[in-house]
Length: 282
Image (cartoon, one colour):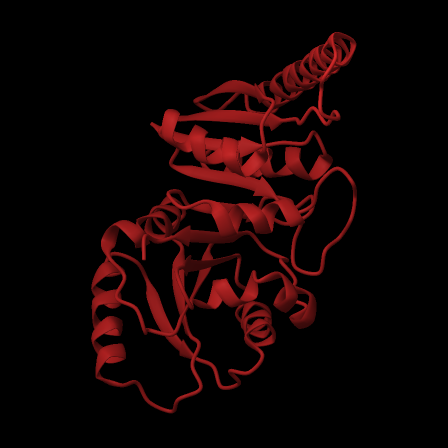
């Protein structure tokens, strides 16, 4: 049974991400954990009165969180009554990324799914600040970021962007393979590099990558301009009618540069399709 964690701030986008996740795994037995975190922002509590006010605020926010989680639960159960899915709600007064990391461990989560824009309605150039933080800080679980109020579309073409400079193992690539297998999707391997030919290491990594994807329809595509990675990727997505973008995150990887905040604001990469980011250990 697949176990999926979906953080929510009760925005429309957060619910759309939850709904997308249920549709993505509509033919799978799944358990979804719907998580809301809230922080009690009070000054340093020194007196008994201050502590009482802090406790009252906590109780208020906790009740509000649980009430809205119940509403979300009823809505998603109604919207997925034909699927073999179960749901559990979690309300925690902790920071989002810290709680996600702990929940991944305690609930044996296979995938984190979240929207790219939060309840405040601000549209960052790349994606919401919380989503970028999660991508940067979650270390042991794939993250699937869903664009603002994105309607579900069967992912038939998945783009996998790589420069072939790292040797991927089967476990790292399995989330991509699993999603492709669900819908008999093809994988379009996008070679992001400015060199005209691969060196020996890259050739070996490409050979191994093909072996990992041997059960999937896949093809290799070269791109030319390397200075503006985001524009190249966006053009590839448009030209190839890509339904989902996938990358692995590790030191000096493509996604590391794209999700680095100053670069994000500069390059203007638009998260227009679901974006699967798989953290690696190195």
